[in-house]
Length: 296
Image: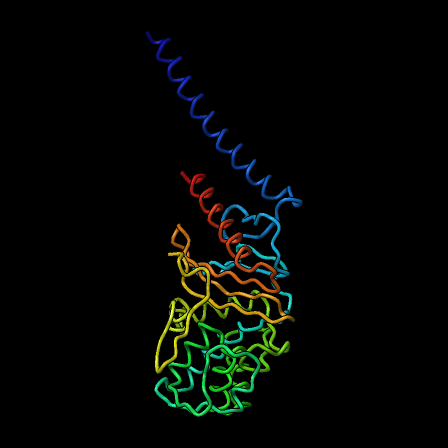
């Protein structure tokens, strides 16, 4: 009887050892796959215990994703490369307008403002409109006219100076603004700078990202609609897209992952912006699932 109990104990102990060894083998194999197949994966440093690998190809020249909780960069490529940002500029335009101008201030749309390239927003010369209402064509339809109306009414050069002042105050070391629209190739930043901007705004100017989740907004005969393709995703918390021929497609997007983490994704010089963003988010989600499984 005693010998049988000893054998049972040894079998139980051996089972525990086998489970432990199997778990470690899976863990090591996963890390090997994440670190050893550069032809299939773009390797990224991660705040997670395992690397976040983004399945290639990503069309963007540069991209980065940040976990807001600890400001860790969890996926990146050429994240410090300075590139034109197109209409991502309008996030700073909105920030400066919200911080320095009353939303109830009424301003007149001028011919000079409407002479700016682009026709989105459908503003009319001579109409009077609240600054708070101009945020909707600015952020939903990326209206260059709306950006110009706000900046010119405040004082154009002063407004641009404030945009650069705010960038410096937030800690955006490689960001520069030449105009409030993003048409200028002199409006430049990096993926990491734009991640810092997105977190700062998400925390301190949440209304701006709330507006970017609106499907449409109507007032005084205007109907401004949001063309963003992520609006039907419950995980999407807001963002801004941009495009010029010099900058190609650009994007800042914020999501809450299934693990409850707020994550921002930036892509610059992209040919397929939505696909790039979703590929990065999908990789982060899969990494979280693996991490959760290994923690059990």
